[in-house]
Amino acid sequence: MNRGGWMRQSHRWLSIVFTAAVAANFIARALAPGEPPSWLTYSPLPPLFLQLFTGLYLFALPYTRRGRGVPQA
Image (cartoon, rainbow, N blue to C red; front, side):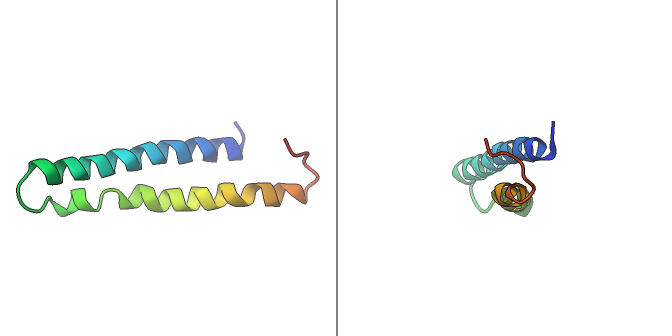
């Protein structure tokens, strides 16, 4: 798998992890009285930041390949 494909697959898995972390956060807030632990509150942030970087890379990928003479699909 080339680098773009690997990055796209990582971006997809990070979105699943992010969604699960947000869902766990909402479930914890709905079921438990009071404020949930801070590790649970901030757990969606690491996958979100990683998604930012992979998304920016995937956004720039077609523009960087155009100059190299790679045919566009």
